[in-house]
Image (cartoon, rainbow, N blue to C red; front, side, top):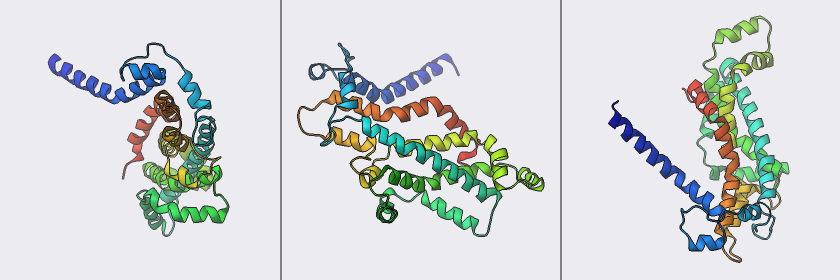
Amino acid sequence: MNAASRFFLYAVLALAALYALAPLWVMLATSFKSLDEIREGSLIAAPQAPTIAAWSKAWSGACTGVRCEGLKPFFINSLLMTIPAVLISTIIGALNGYALTHWKFRGSELLFTALLLGCFIPFQVVLLPMARTLGALGFVDSIFGLIFVHVVYGLAFTTLFFRNYYVGVPGELIKAARVDGAGFFTIFWRILMPISGPIFMVCVIWQFTQIWNDFLFGVVFAGSDSQPVTVALNNLVRTSTGVKEYNVDMAAAIIAALPTLLVYIVAGKYFVRGLTAGAVKG
C-alpha cells in the first residue's frame, strides 16, 4: 500500500470515528454546561464554565415521576439484578453446554434445538406466560423476579455459546478423564473450567450488556421500588414538570450507560478473543 492509499484509508477511518463519537461528545459537553450556556451556545461547543451540578442532580436529586431521588436507588437496583443474573445464567449455561457436548443423552439434540429456538423468541412473546409464572412463584414486583426472568431468557444464549465452544475440546481428553475415574463435575471443574476463560468473558459481557440495557422486562415486571436504571432514566427524561433540564438528562444517560462502557473498555479484547476461539462456530 502506497502513501496516498494509506493516507486515504486513515482519513476515512478518522472521519468514521468522529462521526461515531460525535453524539457522545455532545452528551458529555451538554452535561457539564449550565442551562443558560446551553440556550446561548452551540450544541457541539465545549463548556465555557464546566460544572458538575447536572451530574449531582441526576445522581441524587432529579425527579423520576413522583420520586425525586435521582438515579442512585435505581442504579443500585440494576446492580442487584444484573450481577446475580449474569453469574447464574453463565454458570448454568456452561454446565448445559458441557452436558450437551460430552455427556450426551437421548433427546439431547432435540433439547439443544429447542434451546436454540429460544434465542429467536422476541421479548414480547414471553411477557404474558412469564407474568403468570412470576405470579405463581410469588416473585412479582421484585428484584428477585427480574433476576429469574433474565436467567431464564439468557440460558438459551449462554448454552449456545458454551456448547459451540466445548465442541472444539477433544473428546479423547474427556474419555481419558472418565477412565481415570473422574465424574461429571470433576471433569468440568478441573479440565474444562481452566480453558474456558475466553468463552466466560464472552458470556459475561453479552449477558451484562443485555440485562443492564433491558427496558421492557424492567417496565413490565418491576415494582416502584425495584425498577432498574433504564426505566428510571425514561421516567426522568419524560418528566414534564418544571424547566426542561437537558444537561441533567444528558448526565443521567451517561450514568446509565457507564457500566456497559466500562465493561467493554476493560474486557473488550477478551470478548473478541472468545469469539474467535469458537463462540459462534457451527
